[in-house]
Image 1 (cartoon, helix red, strand yellow):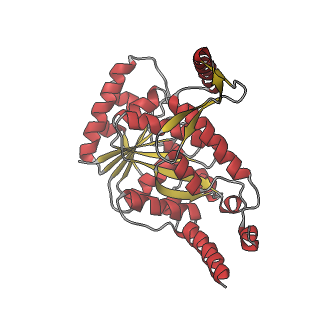
Image 2 (tube, helix red, strand yellow):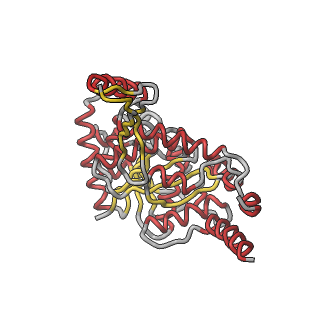
Image 3 (cartoon, one colour):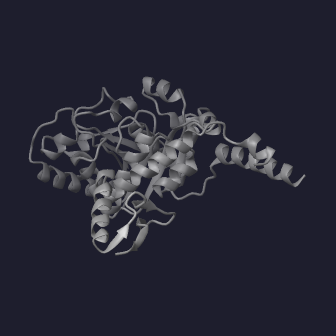
Length: 266
Length: 84
């Protein structure tokens, strides 16, 4: 039986889809079978991040409304073996929502039997889309950036996840700028963790390569050079339960502390 | 403050402003109350206590405080002048 993980944030534009895709790519690269499901009905994006936009024939709505079988709607990734996508519908029709959510739950249940991980890319906000996605998740990854707006919304989402009984939730702190943190102009990771009271899954540094990889429809997690790529590799391993150090940040901080202590003694 | 603290101190206070403001809004968000309601509670508490005791209304203070633990506290601080 696989695990269903919802990737969510509350605020839009903080990197949910990028995180979902690279988490999926990272886990699949580590040999796990992964299904990425786009739950952002009406605003699909996972397909373009993965470079699979031309291969989508059926979407999750087609499955729910019986126009195709689930196997027909699942698209295999071009580069990473064992990575699969279930696209969201671009058309937002006003069917009976409660019934759709029930059917969605049935689909997720079935998928968990087939894959090691089912990752749900939740839409922004805390409306039905988020509720549907988090209803069926075993664990949650909350994405935020070190900005007051994103942290506030993340807090709201964490409250809702706890109310739903999802106790295993972890934070991905995205677009972290070490230079700004150092100069005291950005909330640092400890501030954010203290405020939100959540376990850290990983820090993704601000990295222009995220955009260039998205432009090409490739996953940055496949890069052993890009800082954000390496960060997503570590995050994926941590999600599998491995203990992985938080390298650059801790080294950096540790060094300054050591110098300070050393000079104080002298 | 030692010279070393000065040297290694974060240049700006910008991030601490962010932290303080966030903690403030989250205290209210988490309790689903707002600063206006806090004012209303303050006024009503003063009214009730004022019926029985003479209080220093100007110095009276009612506020929600988040501590390191998960619990928030409603702090009521009402200086008394003398018993009526």
